Image (cartoon, rainbow, N blue to C red; front, side):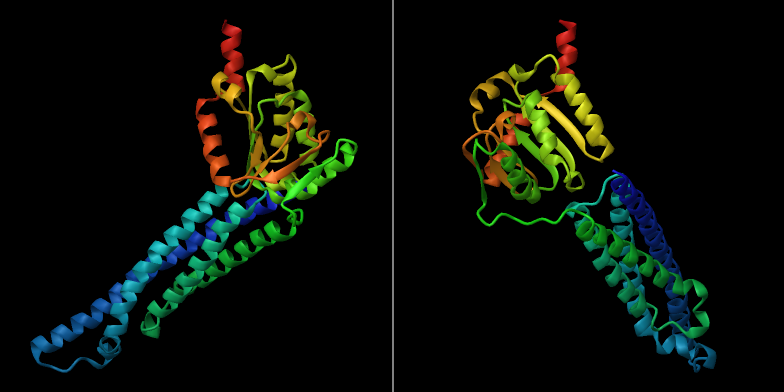
Length: 335
């Protein structure tokens, strides 16, 4: 827990640094637009004035007119860099909103995009400022290079946390987990190594027999893998709603919340609960068929891969008609 909290704090500070870097890039692009517009305007103005008066261009203005083509292109590049800086800032802000979570592969998508955009930005910035006379280049012109360095180092640290500070994942070669009722303890270890190890981020469970015993088994499966996940959504049925179930859900929610995991338990529509015999667990990429969670380690069965598309579609259908456990309790108390 202390290690997880420390990582969350460090990553939170890193996201703040990333936002600062993005602000510096944005400031630098605005500064460059103003600078280029001024220099380009001087060059064009000098050329027009020279043609109008039929006189040679003043020697001190020659550098501006000589670089007019480069400066004109630079103005366009500076505007592009401005919008890239906005995109970097948006990505940094999204990551900052999730600073209380240990970063997962989802965060890696934003950090990768931020790194690519930062590289494109600094290249465009360099090309755009290339034709500006040195006399016009002030200290502010070098700030974007500092912003770029901050962004790259921040992204590198987040990627380090994602790749090095989370449990190693070793996908099952067989694509299935064999369960033997005579080895319940070994079954739990196999399920951890070959099932939970292949899931991450937000996981979803459909099991109409998910009860108090299932809560215990789920907690055992999550043990040691908490940093892999940020949300768990469970769809069960009203018939599993024992007297202690709501309180146990609250206790589990509180403990998982301390690890940065959100828990959402919902009750399926009664008709859905009757028709939904298949049980499965899934994240954003993989889906697995499995036995009931309350006896998950005590049945002679195989946990096998399922069609993610079908499981995702079915889960969405059931979720739309389900009711939150808390809301059901309120309605029940009113009656």
